[in-house]
Length: 331
Image (tube, rainbow, N blue to C red):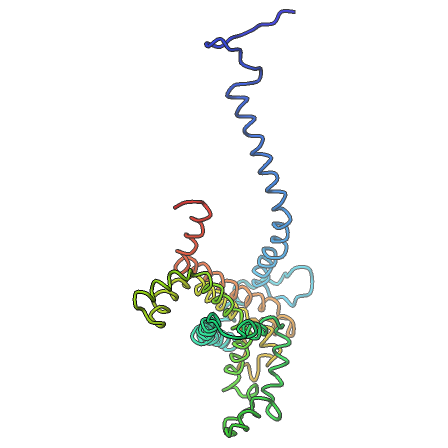
């Protein structure tokens, strides 16, 4: 048996199976294995995402084009965009849009500044501040149902805590049937929302404040800045990313608000506290107009999506770019 021996120019015999083609194949194998591993890890999450997120969105969009009572496998009575035409001619739904905007406005103007102020206060050295933090955050841990039942008793017109406190301080004239009056029910609902959710935003602001190096504020104090100037020109700008995230979560939560309203008022009196989610539930599960309720859900989804994309594009753009740059190791 005769072997053929080939030598390279420098006199060294290359090993069998070497060369550009073999090196390319060997380099592709780890990449293929890596991609296979990534896909295997992502597959369960992708399946759940498609089943629990994408499929309901597509089904709601499909059902919104039909007159359907929810019975049967799929709707068959196609009516096109009539549900959407009816939607934007419905005074109740238009009122839902206005009430949602009012809740968002009050939350951004009142609830979030209150949470920021308490966070700045609890960042100071004081006795028992850990207990205060726990007490302020505790309402957020409670479920919306518990909060709703609790404040149903607080706002009770006969023996409720709200009217009792007003009577005790001599303000009996301000006593009201808080949840039964169209003129006061939205403000009562906002009080409950603030009590329930401001602790979450307070913790966000507190974490953001504690991530600011003390050297920065100390340097501003050495330069002669007082407490307000340090907060205005140093702390507040550095809290910008945290504040923007907080506003985003607050707005999305107000758009989708349901369970707290349902337990407190059921949307009443005379639709005075209804939100889009409550109206959707009413038509879908009590009146069995699932096609119309699906149209409401599609509008809610579009409003949330447009706000989220616009907010990330124009408000959080610098924060997202900074995060991507840091993750990529760029300068």
